[in-house]
Image (cartoon, rainbow, N blue to C red; front, side, top):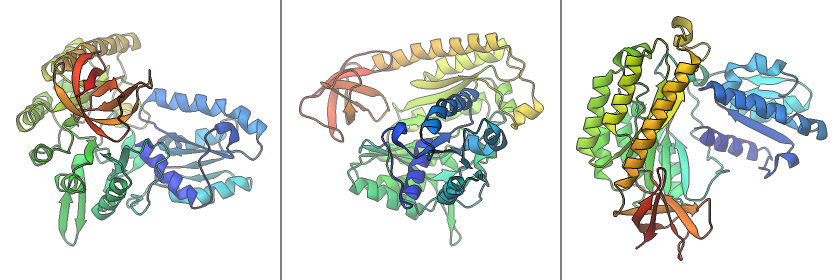
Length: 427
């Protein structure tokens, strides 16, 4: 989502005469887009700010701005931190950036971190600053109404609001016409997309169907679904359209119903398993990935083992795995004690990672001998004689280049694999 926000920012600034620089050393303006979801993300930002100190000494005109979630949450601490930052803009204040920059250039500290109930940036065509010309992100919601006890997002991104579907479809059409071959629809919880106009409501299943109809050559992905909200209607829509990718990211966070209740996730273990069974039934062969948190407040060995058993039962294709880190201001920070020792958190996270590595390897091995349609995204990181792309199931494939190039679809026979990558040849 930060990539999508950065592209909105680039569009706003381009209208004020700013253009991207390939090197920080040559820039007169540096913006750092931030995330507050995890403690280590914030620590990386502090390190980055300190690393920029030498550039400010070398270039007296250089202004450094902090934007995004961390900017909203830590504005006072950031401004006091060794004069590292000249201005701050929260996630709903990007339209004000030209004014904030002007204030900073006149010698004043400038801050706008007000949250909005309406801002979706729906009228802005993002500048694809990090684009490969093949895949692009399209935001469909902002903010979040799910008050998960461990999560800071509702406090730094505000209430959930949906984007006008007409603007979403306009952006998708522009991307298709520009030659893009894949879009990912983004939201903290895409399943709760709900646009109301003239008394009628447009849901996410309806929206993704309209996006899929833009072009049969355009793959459609989405992130992220919420287990309590993902509907059979959405699953049936995914099954009906070949160009809606057969991969669903469905964060479990824990396999323990007791821990899920403390997390305020809105479902229990059995409810989550029922959604997995629905996916398997309606979309046979669909890839499923997840998020898992190790060491949440009061987590016991029994709770941890419940997470491991859920992972094994589901056979996740891949996962994002984290050690719990308390975020100030969240429900868990206010009401629960972060009482799992760090060494226990680390050990449990290692258990989760080890199991998922086995599950991921198994997920890759079953694909050997199969043929997949792969969208080429570019050269392999290791050799320009090989190309890389992904299957509809979001599995990375590497294969000899031949005469193909980015943006093309090819059929690839899988010959072997590593735990992370499928390896094959074009047929």
